[in-house]
Length: 222
Image (cartoon, rainbow, N blue to C red):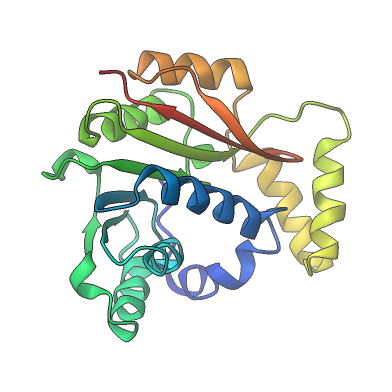
């Protein structure tokens, strides 16, 4: 999992909305499903919580939800901790810096949004999915949104064009093009389904698609 430091952490929230088509929509769709699934109390794990934006937005929807904000970046979680304090949410959020293997709690739901593509498919992706499975209660849902392998020859170029309309600069576009080719490790849908099955999850169901980004939901097998 990426360990964002310094300026990468400070400006992450500002930058990410220019890099992911439908960024606000994918979070809104995830939140809508959580409202239906968990009308009352729930413990929600946010994997790669970063600066805590997902947690703060979800916390507005249901005052009885509590959260575990997990990340490997101390700098990102320091920003998150300050945000939770400023908004009066600290009593509802446990911050967990490090791998999930040291997490004692069992959770009702897990979100892993825009994280998995940073990990290579050399056992790293599988390790994270296994860790998530291990802390979920039986039959509990996982919501996964990730960058996928392009399904057409022009999909990546279309992503870059659309990101320019979102405010990405020419320099940012050049950097993003490099990252898409060299820094990310996207899967195709079949391989992702295989990994989820190997890690103890049921068949995934799509709920979001915007060019190279896909959102899936699945449940831990009982």
